[in-house]
Image (cartoon, rainbow, N blue to C red):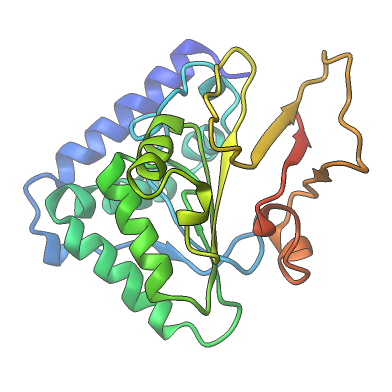
Length: 234
């Protein structure tokens, strides 16, 4: 668990980097789109700064693994996250166009995860994520979110069932203790089992997250299939 002072330092570092990129033209900012990492495996992904773009993070930010990464590697991790945010704020069209271009260049391992760090910004951002999935039907795409209200509003405006989402787009509602999850459309959930929890999930009914997306993605199950999944507090 991180202290408030540690969280404040990360927030200040993010804000300082945002100020650095604010006067720089979007064409001169390099976007950070990863082809994978040790945690999630060979999965393309794009991230935004934690906390600054995360809805409902007042509790989980003290446990956030990306806060740890920002503390350990501020010169690379924070910079990469803020570069993406800077492009997004200057031109949403450019932000999503660069992601599309990177996906078009992908010849194998066509899996994409939104937001290893960060979260869905608003309903327009989510709508663009949906359109991205439609433009890339050969990709399996997924995301975790605590911005339940945005997803619920999009579904309500697009037929009122989660079937409105493209088949290749899997959205998991990320649970956290003390946070009310409003889930009227039965979206799949990602749960954290805390060390202090008395009740443990039945592994026959839900998937356990092994911590590397490569393990599940090939079989198209677990998070990739949009089924309820859990992990232990870490």
